[in-house]
Image 1 (tube, chains in turn blue, purple):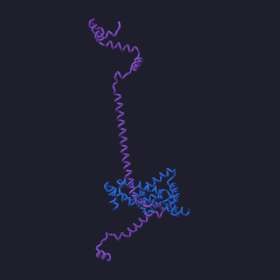
Image 2 (spheres, one colour):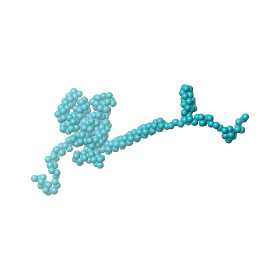
Image 3 (cartoon, one colour):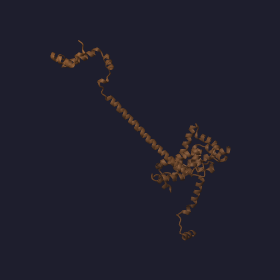
Image 4 (tube, chains in turn brown, yellow):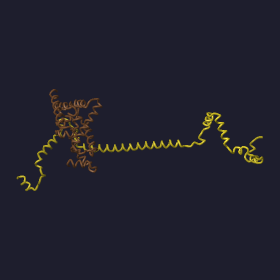
Amino acid sequence: MTEKKLIASLKNSKTINLAFRELINKYKERLYWHIRKIVINHDDADDVLQNTFIKVYRNINKFNEQSKLYSWMYRIATNESLTFLKDKAKKNNSAPEELQQTLLNNLHTDDYFDGNDAQKKLLKAIARLPQKQQIVFNMKYFDALKYKEISEILDTSEGALKASYHIATKKIKEYLLNN
Amino acid sequence: MLKNNNINKTGYTIPKGYLNTLEKNILNKINSVDNLSDSSKTGYKTPDDYFINLEERIIKEIRTKNKLEKLLSNKKIYYLSGIAAMLILSIFIITQENRKNYSFDDISNYEIESYLNAETIDNTNNLFVNILNESTEFDQLYFYDIKNETLIEYIESEIEIDNYEF
């Protein structure tokens, strides 16, 4: 099914359920990994992913098709993840970045992590970046999205994104060299 | 030339521009598959079969939330209706209480005594004087000329004289 047809089916009350299943199948993994990199923990990622799809289901009629469907969904997933992290950090009386560091320090006890030391170090370096730089870096480095696509998702100019990615890369390199 | 020959021999055809975009499509597919296996880059894993039943769980979650919200909105209507009914009932009772006509029997003797004690004697006397002055039939009532025969007849019929000792 083409994206246009899928959107039309999602906006039709008679076909939404079938189309929604297709939508989940198409994007579940991409969105999961995007969310997981922000919230780190699998259970939290699962919660946020479900909330993301629920929001998509409920707001599909508000989607104005100015951007691509997956860009819109990525944006919802990003906002949901950041809100989740912020709320969780607030409960622990800490900043979201601090919480991420704490979670990454406990990765060795996580059943759903089997990365090596280099991977752990890279994730820690990323978590030291400001939130927006983290997201830009993740989307560019791990998800291999184009600046144009990231620009649509984050509603930021391509120039600003390039600068952000450049700074992020520099900071990560510095951290990896010094630790 | 070879391509055209093959088409001619088998009868198969391909969509317009298929071969021109094939390379790009394959590379996109490879990239997208690489992106999906994110765990190789980050080290993060998911429980076995996590993605297999994910779709079912999300749809179930949406249904549960929808049902819950429907129930809550129904409950809200019930609560509001209850409050409205209570308000209407209260207003009705208050109005009825205000409209109620009290009869003389509703006033206890104690209340009458208290009232009379609280009022000044002068006022009470004035009240009676006014009543007596206003009554035009007073003379007729109290100075009625009663014949002796009538009086005896009344006493005999109404009063049991045997009960009284002379």
